[in-house]
Image (cartoon, rainbow, N blue to C red; front, side):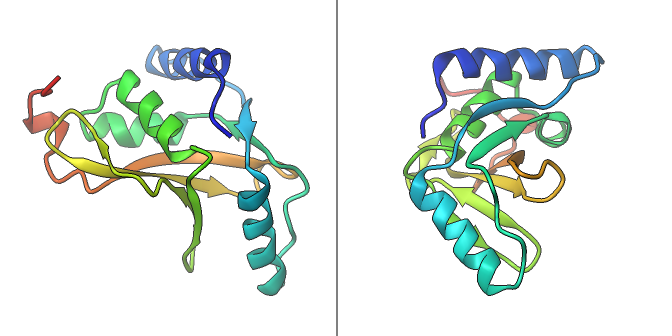
Length: 151
């Protein structure tokens, strides 16, 4: 489900605290859609893994902030990446080592790229909830460190 405006403000605040070196704790930021929740549990069940017990998504943000800051992204960019990757239209994709939600619609990232925002989910550390561990703008060939924003 789309992230509510109040939760977007909480995410932004969480990332600002991280940037300031403050301690942060997990916050609930939204819910997986029924289809996303069912798709994740179908895969986990077929792989002999424990299923998710809750559709709630939590967010800490330390890894997301560290990774995207190193790429030159701003906090506002990070908020948009997370919001886009957790869109209700995003689909579950499972790889050998991770489960992700990937937006099926490309987004202009403001740096000359059309990206598909992908949120990496951690499914065991915050049990019974899923954690939005990081958000990756897949297809960002032009690094923000070396590119002036176009908007």
